[in-house]
Image 1 (tube, rainbow, N blue to C red):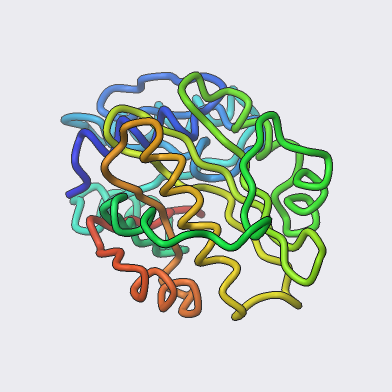
Image 2: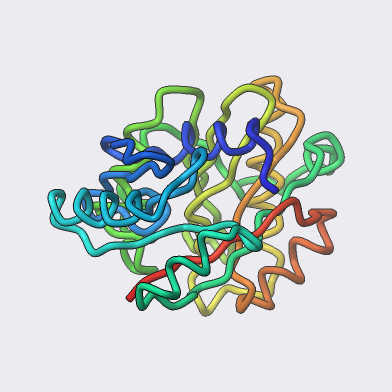
Amino acid sequence: MISDEFDAAWQATWPAADYAQTGGLRVGRGLGGGGRVSAARVTGPWAPADIAKAEAQHAAWDQPPLFAIEDGDPIARALADRGYVRTRPTLILSAPVAPLAEPPIPPVMALECWPPLAILRELWTEQGIGPDRQAVMGRVAGPRVAILGRIDDRAAAAGFAAVHGNIATLHALAVLPGFRRRGLAGWMVRRAARFAAAQGAGTLALAVTEANREARALYDALGFHRIGSYAYWTR
């Protein structure tokens, strides 16, 4: 099970525009920001009628019904009975900040800024993280930073990190295809860890799909370990 501490950090560092409680489920208003902010999630004891209420709330906000369910949660059976299918299985990973932040980062390899530079917004958009998802970053109330990755004298990667309590989370990490597998993503992660350390956070967390083997290999090498998993349920 994902801890309450991590769950609170995840929502604080990647927040929906609004939330509605439908019994034991909480629905996010995503405004086009993706499944992580729009999916309904279990927050307490639920009844089958709560699923219908969540569906109605999705409809009221003009977004497709979607549920983010931790692996092993019994609500999955109820969703399957209503015609939902499991998609995009995702792992939650974390690592201690201190060892990640220790190695010196090569000059101009991974740079911090806020608000995001125009080139960062262009990089995100090029990699499918458009304005609606970038707007999620603007809703974060706590410490936050955009990270620009450079290699071969050009901007080639973008990332976002934010801190809530003792946990920093890394979101929207994207490296242009022609510059992958050259170590840039690793330095981006280490820059996020340095930001986390400066804010007093002791843990860096992130999410990665099970299918993304390349990214999972990188995170394994950096010392991340699995602390939970979930999948989206959709019709």
